Picture 1 (cartoon, one colour):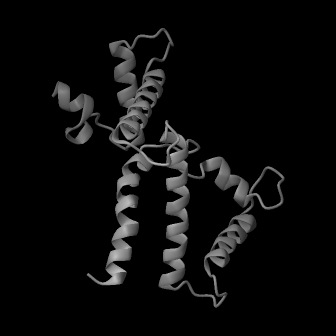
Picture 2 (cartoon, helix red, strand yellow):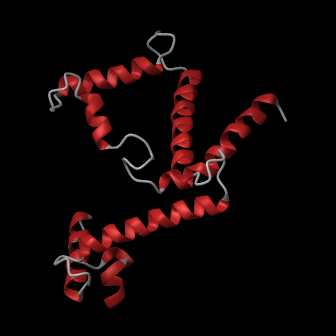
Picture 3 (cartoon, one colour):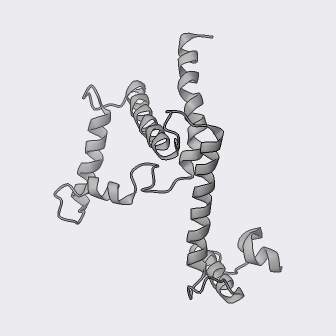
Amino acid sequence: MSTLKTATLALLIPLALAVPALAQQGPGDGRGPGPQMLFSEMDLDGDGAVTLEEMQQARQGRFARADADGDGLLTRDELVAQAMARAEAGIDRLLERADADGDGALSEAELDEMRDARRMAGLERMFERVDADGDGQVTEAEFDAALARMHERRGDRDGRGHGHGHGFWRG
């Protein structure tokens, strides 16, 4: 196997193992910059509002940071460097979040614990959204209302769910 292929595999294998765990994390919880971070990057004058001009300048700034040689083009090497920097930062955040014993490595148990915690947090958030009256119980009416809101957001006006969800269960 060539040196390039070996190096590529050496970089991609840990990334492939980390991506599922990173994908389960939401904004602001270790995955990377959440909406507030992105907003603050675009709010160049710090006035708490973002103009179209600031958005354009922020985009150009990101391009300029990626264009290491300043030639106005992003080469494969520059794109790979940007992707690797983001991947390394994500892996560092993953280790910081999930490495319970602090040994700099993740065991299967540590990954499972983090995934389980993320799933439970997601389930709890979903339950809170569905439990409209906040009494700790979801009635059938609350469940149906939540499904209707979901179908509305997805543009599924007939409520049948295209083979999923409420319409699927009730025919």
